[in-house]
Amino acid sequence: MFVSVSMFAQSPLKKMTKVDVNPLTERTVTKAQTTRISTGMAKAKANAAEKNASNYYLDYVDCAYNIGFSTRFHVAADVEFGNDGKVTFSNMLYASIFPDAKITGTLNAAGTEITIDNCQKIGSIQGSEVFLCRAHVDQSGNVTFDKENPLVLTYDKATGQIYAKDYQDSYLAITDDTYNGYYTIAGSLNYIPAEYFPAPTTHNYSYTDYDGKNHEGTVSMINLNLGNQEVCYVNGLFTEKMEDNQGNILADYSTAWTCAVYTESALTFPLFQTLADDIILAKLSGNQLYDGNIDFTYDAASDSYVQDSNYDLIDAFASQQGIGFSTSHKNSKIAKAGTAGVENVVNDGVNKDVVSTEYFDLSGRRISNIQKGAGIMVMKYADGTSKAVKVVK
Image (cartoon, helix red, strand yellow):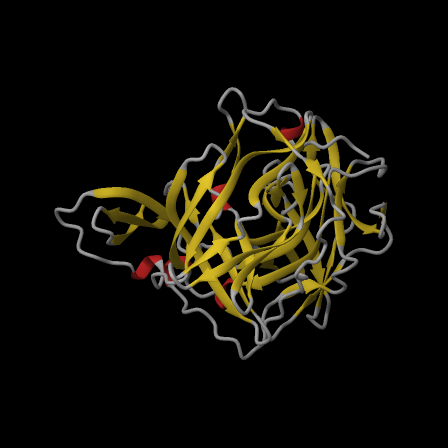
């Protein structure tokens, strides 16, 4: 097996708190089924200004270096259908290393299946070419490559959804020309058209960090009612940046979306979930790392969902020092009530003191700033009101 190309395995970290891993404890997990979109589901109102935005959002399973499989949610993805039957996807495997790579496939004559081109070149690592190949993973975690049988995705022409035909055996791996190991793996691909996602709502959010400092801010939430259950995509649960000893930013968690399931009295987050390449959201008790679920139980007194006090939430990753984390959250609260969406939060801000400014892209994802194109700037005032302004650069 290859040594991970992850920067986190090669660079000294600014802070590393080691933990013990107990992957056999608390394995009861809310299983992440492939979300099926029905033709009866309402589509979000189209906005002409969003025509340059990504046309799909991808949920999938990826593999964190030296930790294992995790689920990554609501990743903006571009899917292009050519007149010649070719289909092009933006790359999701180590996108921080291969940001401009494309994955190609072919739509069948019936327009119902997309076959991913097997063993296609993705890029180069330290001068060596790397390739994308179909892979199988057995119950023990052993990986074998399948050069003869490419991965096939189902394309639902009625809804536009694209998903793995067999989501339990749907892995793609990045490898070199020896095919003796892999750099990373992705599977259970599930592309949902962007038009099915309503505008996010903004909710007050607070937590206490590893050093005991209290933080207050907001999270963006998108609810999808799937008939038998309601899921919630959450952006802003972690907004920290991973840095090395020189202050170089290795990962920015603020772009990550997590996903929870509404239960009778709680917002339940299945774990593990991916915050950035090779970095996962996990829970910690004492010095022990756990997967499973973590509940944010509804508290009527504060009208908030409150994090289970038995666990801290951490950004777990593997490095030369072992498995550890750089930050943790406890005492987290997510307000149940939220504003209708950043584009609808408008108040008179004349002669008011601005206490914070946040930026969002047109899909509602929080960003560090608006570099180019259109976005939403939300100014929050000392009196608790806010104002949203569309900005074009």
